Length: 458
Image (tube, rainbow, N blue to C red; front, side, top):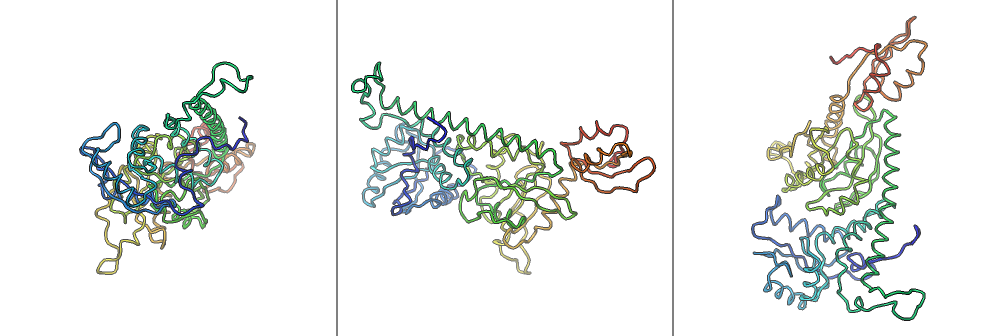
């Protein structure tokens, strides 16, 4: 198999079932409420989010309901009576697809399909389907396909009789030896494709690392937008940068990282990065596949955690985001985080014509600032720009440095690796500069200009 292969090895999962060229698939949504299972999100919020996920692809949602699960059954997840009731409803309402808001084992999925007569997809498969539709760049497509194939690998079971038939025992003599089952062949081809995709993504990762090294040679700092899906990150990105990144009231509207330059109140230029949105129970395989993209967040100098404060579940959503960030090694202890309380325009006005206070909104963790804004109206954005500048200043240090006439190369180094605030009038001995140095360049600065600097912040 070569790099140009565009085979459809086992894309017969969710992507193949939801055919965009035909009429919308008739679907039923089931949101299990498992007794004793803790969740940050109340069941009604979980149900609403699952409906939002299902609405992100081309489905005709016939019904959506919460089902009580007293004990999780290894064979079907839910009880026999519940399965029988669902099966009858599937038949009566001609349901083609059942979406279940949980992670099903391959056996549970297969048994539910057999008992209900409908195709069954769990939460992970649905999110994979959405990612498959949203991926726009070659890198995004590779990452989604890898996650999908890893998901499918665990579901290669003997579901069809043809998988049990031997092939190769007759006919083509050049194959030789005992025949391999169709199932074994499928697994082998699947693993080959996974290894190929992993190699391609590893190449992407090496390219990103090279780009980071190049970026480290410039004075531009990175400010990364993160947040729960549909919190308004891309709209905020567009408003701050004047860009036209795809932004819509959809879950996972953005999958591919976009970077643009913005200018802060006092003229400092930084790079603003928009990233993929997070969601509760984001499949581990997706986090793993998108790690090359998500690692951009780990390299940022400031994190803007965007929260939709008009959503009653925004605090639990924020906790989900922090858990994913922690998995990436990003914590308030090692990164400056600003919470952006977005969509205040949806909160209405108080009796005096002003915005209601956000007394119920509290930071989800340790932050350097929390700024209420509206990415749509622009309200609060000047305060946000100032907060970004303040956060960056907290991490940088200002110095006066002397550069003799004989060390002209030092002037170029300062312009490339620091922010030159003032260049004082030259004297016979040389020139003095007042510069601001960021943490990633501080060690090199101190070594290069040892004996010629004065710390202005001490």
